[in-house]
Length: 394
Image (cartoon, rainbow, N blue to C red; front, side):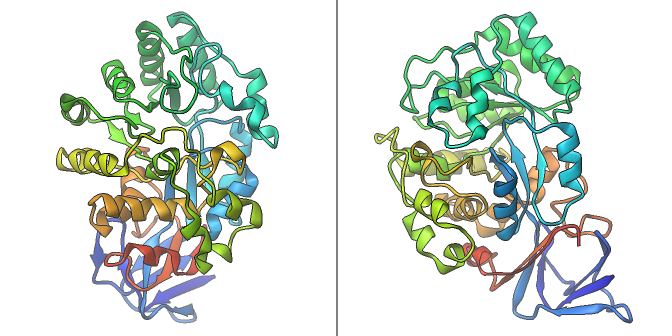
């Protein structure tokens, strides 16, 4: 079936373009601009904006999470640790009723290290798997662990640098430098990105020194002056997860939960979760985080939008699949990014950094993963929530 989306302004993942028609043929974009093919089903999108499907670059998910994400135009979730098999991910890639998924498999952490401290709080099997959470203690074990994850289909590798000081569990064991470096080198030997979980500036510097490709969070504490420059020089990207920092600082997302555009798409568990906060680092300050975002932007660091949403349990409040990525875009703009910069952080930039060459842009041949919204989010970022239609694989 051929469908023509006509009359919308088109944000192609980089900028608003002149074309006002996008043609879908099957699962792919057949044309951008030009005439409407004879016999095509026409979607009148006048007054709206057509975007590439959004990419959440930091989640922990299940099938319900993937389904909720798609309701909000998030057509791909990049998991940052989980137990999805390669076969499951291949099957998900062929579905059009849930968001697509990428995953590193399990992360590299020492015995008793993060995130095992959360395992008693889970309401379902997602985090209870951590009872069998694998760990490493030497460089050799780390290299073998990474190789094993790759053999099981890992799309990239996750390493943890977390002493618990900023998340309410001080004193957690942390990987030593040699073991950390071995894990990163093994990831690169297999041509896989290495993404580091960090929550402190010290952890971020250790990650950069070890050669990682990306930071899975922004540091919750204040950075040393030279850290920003070191991140930029190393070409490391940052997934700030400002929504997670906000809830860690004691702020809830009740206003988001009260928005009818959100309330109509989430069940009560998730709305209740949005209305809570983690409040594990109340001394934190969003203004300081915003200053770090501006410094990273000014240094030329790639910023990717991610939420770190997982499940609606009491200690992980303030987040919800799909909705929180839209919230993240709003916080990135509040931090000082232009709306177009924020949109790139959820489309073309993660696609480029994660090698997702078939998405993140509205170009001929790309997957027809698309989001149509009322209004103009390149001027008013909250318009991303005014969802008119979502296409997944056409």
